[in-house]
Image (tube, rainbow, N blue to C red):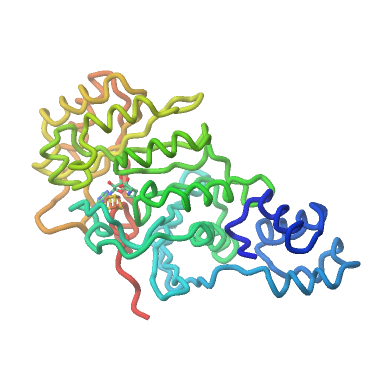
Length: 342
Ligand code: SAH
Ligand code: SF4
């Protein structure tokens, strides 16, 4: 039983199918794994009278063969690398802020999208993560690193909408109230603008899940230069998909903009962005470029970043500057990539 890939309801079904046992036994099993981070079922009072079931569970219930291969910390930010069963690595980042802790998880080893400013994009695509490998990152942060994970963001390695089935199953497991219980309203999925994936996500009926779109430029030539994905899904198609997307009750769309000096930080760039976003319910996060992408990019000055924000705000948009943390251990946005030496 590949337990980290199962919602509580999947677990109930498995309990019935495999062992012909009721929900009564799925409750302590699921609780022990997802609330206590343990697979020691023999000691649980609910199982006292069913030693044969305990034996079967001890034999069958499996966590993925992942382990924490490396861990680095700076200023409260913890970056950890997970070694997957096949020897590949992905990175995750724990970010404590204002009494809440956010975990940034990876959805793929590498990334197909090839954004030129991103270290993950630079390593190319290796493979999709399975649902349980995504859930494992949360499990590891909670029970191995003992971090309270309140919020989750899919902003680590990979394009989550390029691995949508596994990501959706992971979201269902992570938000399950019987288990890890991180509400969808505390989970943000960030996409580079994968239009086909947006359609599938919109149909998935997770109305409180938060959506972030990495825009970076509202001019097709600039955006294509930065993000090859823009050739397949240009700005007009992205806009159509965003307007059609069911944003749920709160109706907020987060927009991420990585500012690169001399590339997308001029007043003209701001004006195009204002025009593009005007009729969408957006909150814009501006991030100054973190070193790690292709050669030749530099971050704008703090003053220029503030100026860019002021242009957006003056046009009536909600925009704020997101400070980068964890740069010293290459844990900031766009810096996740390198596999630790074994
Ligand atoms: N693939 C998804 C999610 C992972 S990237 C996406 O692109 O949205 C998470 C965020 O980090 C994105 O907004 C991305 O644009 C940003 N990012 C990538 N490289 C960066 C860099 N070098 N400096 C700052 N932010 C970067
Ligand atoms: Fe992939 Fe996002 Fe990096 Fe682009 S920015 S290469 S989509 S991880």
